[in-house]
Image (tube, rainbow, N blue to C red; front, top):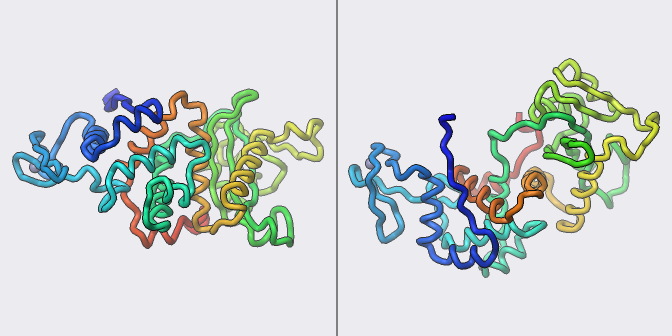
Length: 318
Ligand SMILES: [Zn+2]
């Protein structure tokens, strides 16, 4: 296949995690293995020989270029110990509903709430792999609103002060497969059709309700089934997978954020939710940790300014 195989080496539980990643050297060695799975190669001259300095830098034997295991990763330039980063990645991935900034500040004994908040934003930024495979097979697509619960006003698709979110869910018989969530500007076809196209493999069987914005899915190469709820014999079964996911997210947003959040940070919460949901059946919690460290090593640290800017919705991104 010509593809590199990385041996999946991860702690199976809290006790083995605690015993293994309690020194800077142990964390550096783990990052080193993920960064250079086939052994060290100098980024400047490709020489494979190297030595490690007392400050934890990997130095090329030939050109003496200094490589840090955190350069070009989300931990780049950090002044905090790697042991703390590893703990953050462990809690982020192994706790059932994740951690919030107050929990993390407390768990790590960080002096600043803002540091904990930024770390979580960085971790969320590496929950999504750009090269991830699109959903396929039988899919339910729908949209819903988050926020503005107490604002009153209009309900439904024209509601104001709410964030519109597109959802797609794989159906595997009675079970659910993977999901996708995307913050959108509105429920127009200009938002919903690109959402489907960028998240679902053409040729898939896509079920939606009767909303007109989905009318073009057939022309985009999908097998489109439209079910008008009011005319369906069994109303409960219409888009039941998508509706289950929507209710879980709403409950989480209310439980974790009391329904209050800033729109610009919503996509990162959605990304974290998708990461957790799509790995809900993973046998070992340690495997989720492994995935995040793996992604953290290949994801560039977001500059502080960009973290504060958040993520635009689908429409604004283009
Ligand atoms: Zn070199």
